[in-house]
Every structure is written in structure tokens, then in C-alpha cells.
Length: 300
Length: 297
Picture 1 (cartoon, chains in turn brown, cyan):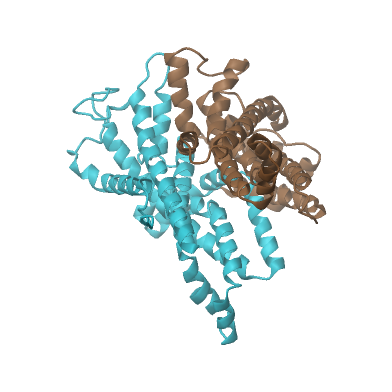
Picture 2 (cartoon, each protein chain N blue to C red):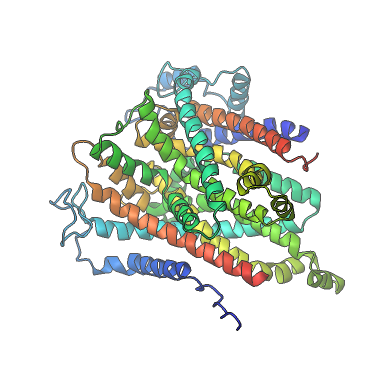
């Protein structure tokens, strides 16, 4: 556990370094445009955004600013700092992500239990087939499809935008659907395996109901693969939210991320990546802790 | 009465059989299909946004191009990226997994720790940055060396390399697990006793025994790479016009959906092609895995 805590800053530093050098070493600066700027003005601009001097000097300066919590200025959205942009957009992305996360976990776990409790039944094969289809339906297929059916044809939900619970529903489903399926299949497989073990036979011999056996005994063991999937799940949700935000026109951090690549807006890009990685590292630490609480057999 | 023995093997169940038929059709279709279209079909025409008809089976797009032909041409790119990317991931993952699985426990632990970290980092985001940072550089290098084919397809080449480099994690985990159990088997001990070296044991004894598992996960890696490519192209950061893939067709399809006029066919048919391919690949991989599993017992 201690090693974990030590490795976090190392990972973060690697992430920052890679991002910084990727954005600084790519050809073309943030102020290149059709019309060439006069040299003096370009020099001043570079100085303002602290992009002058040798690259290693720039790097150390950037790290110093980051330590002070300053993500610097955006080079595209002039006079707006990256901190300001992120403080406006990140809550949106995180709300969407949290809603999708809850949906994926709750629906996924229930579906997995439901299917595993009915081995070799019609219901089980339906769940397995539907989840497989859902895995093959990435957000950029499902999202427009849902808009077409539920917003444009049936007028049940708004086409896009952000702010009301109705506007959250379709995007969250779109984002969560493939991961609902992954969790359901993961839990189904591990439950089926666990239900064949000796301690379950003992529980059956005691005369417990099937419901108690699954929920109180088998699930505690079978849920472990799902718990260790939560870390990658969070990373996938953050990546997926970029597409969902584009499809549903949600003003979140994902759209700014895509634009910052196209605009060579290095500090905004770096800011988004660094904040995402910090969030994921913290989340992974929490997942690790809960894994240890659930499974006392893991020591050390 | 003895129960009739069920046929074992790859096509024991119907799902694997039909999946491979779909895949063969899809592959042949995207390779041969475009040759049957009269020339000029891929060019912009006067008939924009036509719904499906006899002349245009899947309708036409914003510029009056035949959508059916575009789906076939896009499938070439999507499948090419998927297969090449998966093969690269196979090389990286197998090498990494073999080395980790046969190394000392300390080395193995830290190598697998790295895999865990990479799993929980948004890799696709780094790939996005990487592709856009190095595309121009590669183009400049390619035109300097006179590799003309490379100038037009530099993005495709980078895309394949990058996606191969991020989708190897699962492969590495599986190969490492298999290596760990294989190295305890008597035939490896026997090889060690007759004095064979580390690399010989690795390449001559362990690797051939991994072939089955590797093939299964190659099949399962292809759809992941196809999805990743479609993701990048959907955002406009992957394959660039005039080339198109299923991802970029889908992004055009999504853009054509609005309350005033929705060209549903532009969304529906590319989705159908993509999903049929993904579904068949996953099913085939699953069938192969189960058949391998039952044979191993």
C-alpha cells in the first residue's frame, strides 16, 4: 500500500513530462496562422505565455507553476486561464461520468446476478446476447441512434444541451451502456464459477434459499473481478465522455480537449490531461483500498 | 446407451460458424466489392441526401456520393487498421508477457504493475496527442525520402502503430499467466536439464505452446482496435479525408441527424456494417476460446 502511494507522484510526473514534450516538440507553434506575425510581437507573445527560452528551462518553469496549482493561460481562448476553463467545464464532465458510473455498476451488477441465478435458461441467454450487442455498440453509434429515436421521432427527451435531469438521461445511458454489459458479463462469469465451489454446496446443504446464497455468500467472492475493473472503467468513462459530449453538445471538458489538440493549445491540453490523471490516480487508490477491505486474503 | 458425442472444435456451435461466414463475406466484400461499381460512383454527384433506392442501395450522402460504395471503401480502412493494429499488439503483448512470465518474481511484479497502471490511464487520450504531434513530422520525413505512398497515408500508418501499441495489455496479461503455468511443466524442466539456454526455452518450448491462446486474443484484439480507430475518426482526429473509415462515416451520419431533416440511412448502414463485424469477431473469439478451453481439459 505504501509503495502505491509512492508510485502515484512518479506516475503523475511521467504523465506531465510526456504531455509537455509531446505538445512542445510537435512542429508549429500556437501562434502560427495564415498571416505571419511580426517577430517582435511573436517574441512578446511567447514571453507572455512563458514559451521562450530553452526547452528544459520551459519544462522546469511549467513544473514549478503546476506545483503552485497554476495550469497557466490558454493560448487560444486569450485571457482565460486553464484553471478557469476547467473549473467551469470539469463539473459537467464529472456529473456525466458519475451518473454513467452509477448506472453501469448498479444495472450491470443486477443484470449479472439475474443471469447467473438462472443458468441455462432463456433469460440468461437473452441477457448474454443483449450485453454482447451492447459491447459492440460504441457511444458514437448508440448516441446518435438514441437521439434519432427518442428525441427526434418520439420527442421524449431533448436533443442535447445541459442543465436539466432530462438532458442528463440519454448521455448517461449512452456512456454507460457498453460498461453495463462488461460488468454484467464479468459478474455473470465469476458468479457461475463461484457457485460451483465447496462453500456454496455447504450453504445449500444448510438449507439456505438460493437468493441468500447468491447475495450473502457467493457475491462477496464473485464481486472481486468487478471491483478490480472499476479503475479501468473510470478511465474508459473519461475517454468515452469526449464522444458523448460531442454527440449531445454538452459543454464539458471533453470538447475543450479535442479543440485544444486542433488549436495546438498546449497548456489547456496539458491541464485537461493532468487533471484527468490526478482524478484517476486518486480513484484507483480508493478502489485498491476497498478491494483490500473486501478481500482480507490479500495482505501486504 | 452412450450419449452421442457432440462435435468438438471451432464450428461445434452455430454462432462461431455464422460469425466466420459474416467475416468472410465482409472481408471479400470490402476487397472485391468496390471493383463492381461503375467509375465515378465515388465522386460527388447531383443527387444529395437521397434515401435508399435501387440505384443507391444505401442512399447517398451530403455530396451525392453512393453510401454503399463508401461503406465498402471505409471498411477497407477499418479492417486494415484493425488487423494490422492487432498484429502489432500481438507482437508487443506476447514479447512482454513472455519476458514477464519467465523472469524473476521481482521483475515480473514490476512489469505487471506497469500494465496495471497503463490500464487505468486514459491511453487513448495520449494516442490522440501523439498522432497529432507526429503526423506532420512523419509527412515531412516521408516526402524528403521520396516515399510518395507514405505522404498520403502517413496518418494511417501512425494510427496503426499507435493503436497496436496501446491494445497489447490484455494480451500481455494472458500470455504471462500462461507462461507462469507452462514453466512449471515437466517438459520445461527437462529442457533445462539438458542444458538449453533461457532464450531457447522461451522461443522453442514456451512460445509454440502459447500459439492457441495468442490466436484467440488476436481475434479479440481486432474489434478493440477497430473501435478505437472509429473513436478517433469520429472525433475527426483519426483518418482524414479523402480517406474515410467507418468511424468517419458514422460522424457524418451523426452530423446529418437533426430535427429538421434526418438522413437516417447515413447513420444506420455504417452502424450496421461496424456492428456486424464487431459482433462476429467477438463471437468467433469467444467460440475459439471455449473450444481451446475444453480441449485443454
